[in-house]
Length: 275
Image (tube, rainbow, N blue to C red):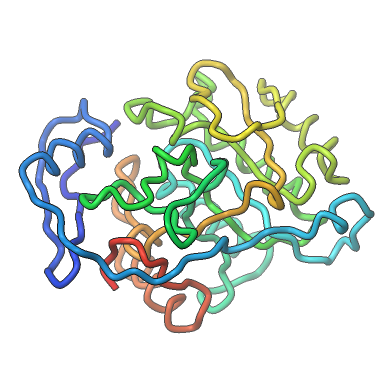
């Protein structure tokens, strides 16, 4: 895992505090816990958050039209890099642009939420911490049914080809487990294709029960029914974020978060954030 140069931790009514560290052995969670031990929490804006999408179970068991859009999510390690790769796929495979991208970072796979349905990143106030609630980091998106298999193929290229593990092994715990979600879970009509793609890539798909443990070194991917385990959009400051596996993606990419918020494709969550 590359060096974490700066990570913002946000307090209500105050500018972002930036912690600069030079150790590459710490995960993002370790960095936050180290920082939090020296800083007192503050009140935060509380706006009720609801699942960003939850599929209709009835549609999952019927055969959907190929052009029908369905909400799905994928996760493997840190969601910053994953969002960037799926944004590129939306552009190349679906012809989408900055006004129609749907990929957003978020959380899924847990069995509970915080007060008012919030699910938040680790924060100084300990508000609805996604890790404590059993969720993992994911990227949610809206895809035509006949393209879900193509995006599944892309998903399995995001693992380290030598180890068949996530590319950021320094992040450990259930928050970084490998998981995916689709309407109906293993009962989705496209699931057999996804299972075959996973097998060819060296992985096994297993039904997720919720609050599942880490998949590190197991070559296992949990599969969730989005009706039972919905996607919760992450904070705005986690959207279109640079990743430490690659060079910075550039301001044009980073600024897509503000555009998506302005156009209503992203929303505030009520969690500690920059907005």
